[in-house]
Amino acid sequence: MTQSKWVIDNFLDLKKIIISLIASFMLCAFVYGQPEKPDPVAEYKNQELAEYRRLEKALEGNKAEKVAEQHQAGHAIETKHLESKLAEAKNDLVEKYRGLEHSLEGNKAYSDKKKRDLEVKIAELRKNPDEREVAIAVKEARSKHEADMAGHAEERKDLEDRLAELKRPEVVICIFPPRPFPPHWGKPPLAQTKDLRPLPGDFGTGSSTLAHWVERNIKTDREKADKPKPQPKRPPVVRPPAPPRPEISQETKADLAEIEKDKADLFKAMRVELGKLEKGSTKEDVRKAVEQFKKDNADKFTEIKAASDKVHEELKAKRPERKKRPEPPAEVKAKIADVKKAEKQIHQARRTVSNELKKAQDELAAKIADAKKNPDKNEVAIEIKNLVAEQAAARKAALDAFKESQKEKHEELKVAQKDLRETIRATKEEGESRTSR
Image (cartoon, rainbow, N blue to C red):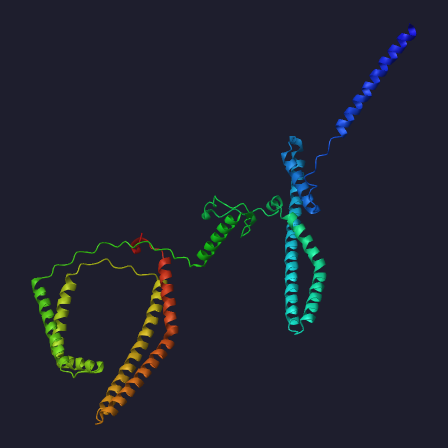
């Protein structure tokens, strides 16, 4: 009986031990048998990029962490340290990205050059009239080119793979954050294609529709930048209302009517004298006839001028007093003097040229008069034609020389006028001298 009880008790203890062992095995299988979660950072082949992501996650965790007040100073120092290390890692990545782009461009340029050289070599080989030799030589040239470019192609693929890893959207956006679009461009187009390509102007990546939109806006901005900016408009001048015109007496009105009548009579008489000129008279003949008419009727012209002066004096006496215009500043006066000086020089030069042309016209008229004395009309016509042509050529040469000699003076006048305008606009009007709002 006692032995049976001992067996039963030992069996129960053994059963508990076995159950405990099975539970332990199951627990171990559950804990250690779960597949490990992949590290999102470990997926990057580039160690520098992986380090950048680790620093970025560490900084995010550091900023999200809540620390006690007594540890905030040390926590801030740690945050600043992580930010500086992250900035250094970012600069290294950007430099590497640019270097890879440059290397890939050089690789492509070398491939293109080798391809062009091969085409040139094949073109030279085809000049051989023997087609069999040409085929063999071309085949050898192509084989040699492919052998030379085999390693180059592998290098290009490696560069493209390394650059493709750094061109992943999440990496590019992180390293090269896209610039925001200028506000004056408005909203981007709503309907866009589903492709992805780099946008012009370092605006990140986007669809072809968005790329065309960005390119169009950049072009418009450049065209507007090239245009000269308009100068600001001056405010409108506010002048006092004009005073009422003085009443003219009946005597003055009668004098004015008499003056107008005398002028009309002189004008009719002058037209009669001009009508007596021969048909085909030149402008010089007309000018001389007008001057002669003025000499013959000098007394009448003097009387009309005296009557006009008398009426003018009466009107001037009745003119209401106007407010005296304020004197401009000394700087403006100096600019006005410069403009007047340049205008006077140009006017004198014009008068000189005009007198010379009139003198040449008188000489031409005298020569034509001498030529008409020849009884042979054909010779007269030919000589007059030659004289007129010579005069026209001389006149054109004189005018061209005058324009060329006055070009600098005209430029000086333009500069002086521009300086005067700018000085007047910059002058502040105050008190009695103020004429604008």
